[in-house]
Image (cartoon, rainbow, N blue to C red):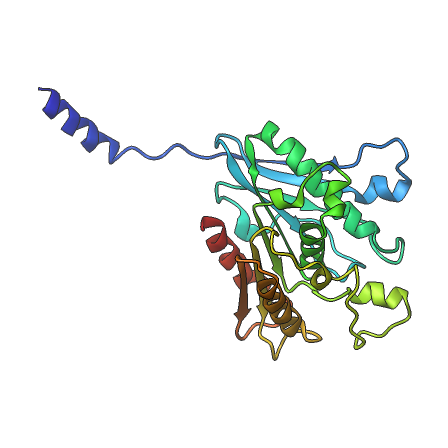
Length: 265
């Protein structure tokens, strides 16, 4: 009788639909809480969070928009919705209203907020992935590799589960070079370059770019050199992807599919 009952339960369970996952979005959360915030910080230092309400210990992707550090607006990427994960999308201060490293510091503050608050939403602070496109990829790389930005907020950058920059600048960002009166074609590698901070103990790094012949200003080659130097430095988890046939802007859509595969690793 017990065996028959067990078979019956297995038969019934095969036809029972899985529980529906509900998602919620909270918008314009301030990730800075100091009394000394100026009006521009109060305007731009905001994030949105999209998360599954009835899933425990989910992964969270912190996503930084592109726009050359001079423009852009936070939004939840459509390809990351309904995936049993949370997305934290971030606005940060922009040039020329601020100078470097203000936007990098904002990125660090937003990631620190995520580490300190994601468990309240049901997420696992050990499963935080930092990503972004173009300028956003640059910010993700800087705060993940130069540990002092997150350390200022009491967070060890090595606690980031994965870094996944999309077409991020790996040399000193061209806006920072512009602040110094240098042209886009003058490469610089200093403390504002992810390449300056190669280290063996960094979080797993997945570098994604568009086609080397279609990317802007040698972006693939910057990432390829970054990958090589990370490996030479002794980093065991650096991977470089080139999306053939896609330019700088167009690589983001297939990049999201690749990001989802990386999250499953």
